[in-house]
Length: 233
Length: 394
Image 1 (cartoon, each protein chain N blue to C red):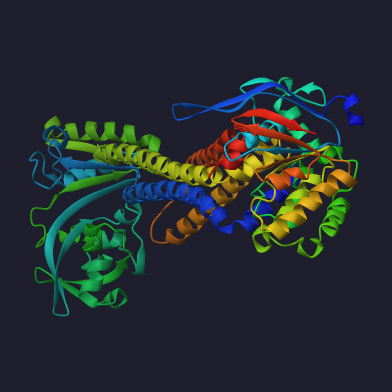
Image 2 (image 1 turned 30 degrees about the horizontal axis):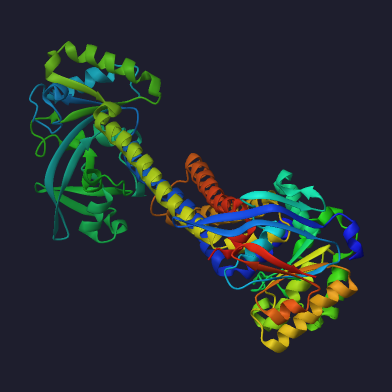
């Protein structure tokens, strides 16, 4: 709570996202106000179709809001160019998806190093060394030349987390990271994500529909029908 | 930049089927255009060669006005003058003419060794050989003395010699019989492709006078000049000479190119057809390239979304796909050109196919441009989507 004195890393002011399914307007996210501070561990809890994933994509700059304002580190992202937005995604945010979203034609190591390619000329670390240490930490060292479809789901998700961490981002966004995993593997992944928050001081925002998963986070935001109906601290 | 090129090649290696199919599209596009044009040009060259063999600077005098009455060149069809020795002698006085050849021409049965063949008699002088570019493959041509001595000799066309003696080389010094007259074969000509010449017994016109040509007349007179620029002058002089004896409508002076003016029309049609063939194959090839490129890049929309989510700018995506498309187009196009070249070389002994540089350049650049545009355009569209929409794309 002491972090609250600072600028929030993520701030949503009256953000809405509407889209059309055929002729029906879907109000996926409605007038959400939200502040997330550095080093927080936040879960966004909601049932299927509640708009929680859309909310996460808005936070992660993977989607643009229909109305409202999104600030990352106090900067209004609607003012940013494509280059600057891509830069924020590359430098500040790391994504972990439910379906991993690894590139199947690239090896584990290449997938982890992919974000590095888009910042090649400004690196202040050795990406290969960092990849190796992540691989080691995530028990993937002997899998680095494998292609994603040759390793297990839990391993794939660990690769995705390593990829999310390679640029040392301030924020990790995880969208149902355990959704495609069995409960044992899922628990391992959750422990891993929690350790990021605990050991790396990374801000973690995790979307889930499982109450017990959400309960592990210090801050929980409950979403229903596109609106934040409650925030538990 | 190097990094992107290396990535592209690694991507090609990992996606062999996609890479091969895509570059195959461009390869076939280039190959078909270049090859069709090459074969078309070959056809044109072939026809053109056939006419060049007749001798370019040839002026032919026919009896009658062949131009006035239409396209009938046959002897006697047109009426008019009956050329004889006197005309030949007066034309010999034209200094411009390097060659003056009287031509007696008749379809006739030729016998030897119990073989009988319906060929042609050509009663000419010794100048026919250089004028018509006739090559002797065995024996010799006849000379001036053979003409003045009325020697009973003949030079045979290749096909005739083959029909009568099986192997043309066997014909040398053998006898042939025409109208119960015997002639000694002193030479055999190379196959010319002209059926009338290939089945002819060529002999001195003086020898043909008598039993073969009792009227001592000529079907036509061939005149030739070595310098093409003299053709017009020669024609004027021929007319002046002949008008002393004949009326204007009694004879025709025709240059090779005039006789073949209709051939020029054929050439312009061939050219138009070539352009049409080229354009059609370019369109067909282009559509093929378009489809495969569009499909293979659209299929990668999800990949574009993932790359965008982890920090690729629109420019990064465009550059990646642009470089991939350029490499594929250049490689595919290059292989297509190479194959077209090989095929053209392979058929050249049989057929004068020719690679046309303009066609090559147009085919290559149009195919490459289509490949690049349709390799980059879907990628650009994917890059402009919100990353999450691209990721969700199936």
